[in-house]
Amino acid sequence: MSQLKPQLTEDEKRLLKKKNELARKRVEFHRQEWHRYKKLGDSWRKPRGKHSKLREHIDTRIPVVDSGFRGPKLVRGLHPSGFREVLVHTPKDLESIDSSKYAARIGSTVGSRKRELIEKRAQELNIRILNPEVK
Image (tube, rainbow, N blue to C red; front, side):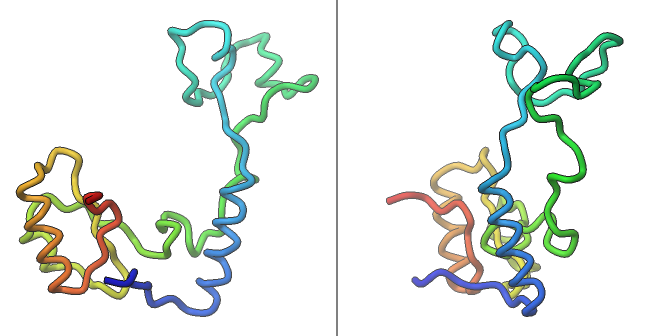
């Protein structure tokens, strides 16, 4: 089965391409002092300290999350393929999906037996699965 493509306007196609390019170039944002203490983890947290050099953008610190790193508004929230994602847990959930704009993502708690049924039904309805079972 060939990969299904979403129906997008020319403007959306152009902006989606730009969004994907920006996403490739975008730096990883790490929490302040993530390298120093293992217990912190590296997921982003806004620096709030009174004397925080990172909060004040002093010196050559790591990049700080701000609106300048966002993608184009029209295609924000789209999967890199151009589809909007719908979380699916049963084959019945596929019935209400418009295959020209939406693609299904099978929930992580779904077992292999039901996953197989969902993938078979999606193929019948011509709906793209974003995380198909690797065979």
